[in-house]
Length: 192
Image 1 (cartoon, rainbow, N blue to C red):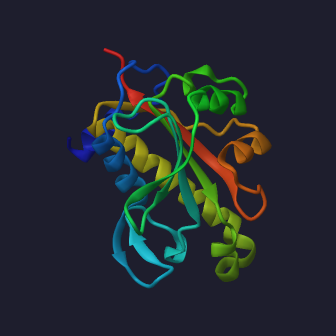
Image 2 (spheres, rainbow, N blue to C red; image 1 turned 120 degrees about the horizontal axis):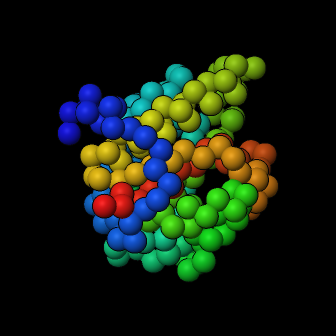
Image 3 (cartoon, rainbow, N blue to C red; image 1 turned 60 degrees about the vertical axis):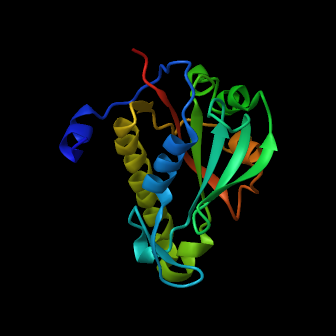
């Protein structure tokens, strides 16, 4: 799909078909949002999304509901390895994610929900007080790439910023201080 077409068709989708995504489709979405293009050092790389100073303060967690060959549960993307780390299995995790987002039920019906956390220390040492601004900008870059990549696989995406901070941090198992939820987006095949 040409980029111009993906941009023109981009919209927030809150209703998903009950069909699962394939692991290959999820892999394509992960590459589009956090993929490594070139390693600069053990701590730094150029990715498929821009980041201030190539600091990449965001981490990606997946709440998996319906993905072929993956059990429902929580996973963390390891971009330098190009792999998913299974954190825990939980058949109810989609429902728990929806509840952590003030009961937005469409989250529970997605095939997968991307959660992004921020690790501010990665930016603060370099950008001081401006760190939080560039972290927010980076989150926008990541989610926009998810929208565009979703178009190419016939999936709908809906960015969500209305969530209970503590509940989402607890769902992901992050401390809420050194690492905290900053943004999320459910993804699923579009209804016919």
